Length: 282
Ligand code: ZN
Image (cartoon, rainbow, N blue to C red):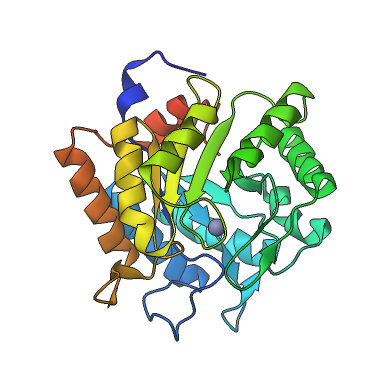
């Protein structure tokens, strides 16, 4: 909980460039190779993104947990964007075993995602057992990695706070609220307000809208003093009704334009570290 400081009102732009689902068949604009990911990273970094939420793909373009591929992505991204904060995915959607999911933590990124409950995506379940969550949280604590707590329902917040009381999660807590995926929390202001109200006072949080709900959820978060995650991972479309495909650059540019119109300045990577309570770059 950090309410002081001049950077507190600034807006953190997290870019989710790739995700697990979109393929080149869905959109030629999804970056899948380390080179493509680094190229998009540089474009959104120049615009103002300060955090990259990253997924790796193998040579066939399929999701992989390989630390070797993540390492190549990190090297290429850091070469072009030395200050940017990296948040690596520990998603179990395709590879549920904790040994696989935790492989990226050996790279000691500043942040890593941690889904604190189970849910159904439209086609697959995302199973995160208490044991898996605790193991991943423990490894993150040990390696001084800030968990990005993925919240799909208010019960996930309850569980995160339970882990906090047990000392399995520690300060600072950072929440990413995901709305609009079929079978989980609907993407509307009422539900977003409810989730935010359920967080400890002064929590630092961002919001993500899935598919057609991306922009409206981001705008809700901007108005409510939260932060945003935006990118092709969450929507391959720039204009959903017209099925106009997006690029990461266009999605990030749009939300920055809206934020500036609404009076939220964009946080630099250094200001983002202050807001999130990250100790020092790495
Ligand atoms: Zn992700």
